[in-house]
Length: 266
Ligand SMILES: [Zn+2]
Ligand SMILES: [Zn+2]
Image (cartoon, rainbow, N blue to C red; front, side):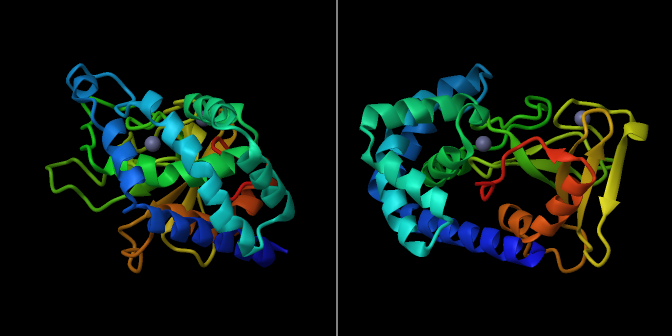
């Protein structure tokens, strides 16, 4: 059962990523991304999130029918396809309102609608986030994404920075725009617990380079990829997250839950 669920989730994620990649160079997508990233004033005045999300809603709503048309023929889970077709038939304004709710808080939208919005929004948000620099830690140290305000999906431990006594930096990775930002090593991104006795890292047998950082205080966990481990150089956090879904099933059996919705969580 585990491997079937994992294969299904991985197949879905790969189909979404392939579609998103094919949209990255599209002129409409590029123009929407440029508009979302154009707010110099937000950066100068330190207003977060840095992207202009009000400018994102309409182009994402306009992109959705194309996303549905591209993905539905790929034998998606049935209910996901049904909901996608239903979204396709809605008017632009109705879709736009749904996208606005999602941009405000992913949790306000049901998981299958969130899947479709996320798949359509990815190319615009990713291009926009990639075009502006990551704020350094003195400017942004919060658990939500400084680019789009989304929640982190996984975290990553990178090579040591080379700065004296700085240690290996940890980054959170956004599930919406794939942006990375620096975050304290031993702090729960969900409830900000920072007592080391309340935080435990669980490493699965036979899987080096990936672990679950579990918080006793709020019973959530975040999956962490350690890029310093040999063989981790080609880890793509949002893909390897899905490829290691067996770890999530194991965590679920222990009563721990993720604080964020997975791309393939439909
Ligand atoms: Zn983001
Ligand atoms: Zn916590």
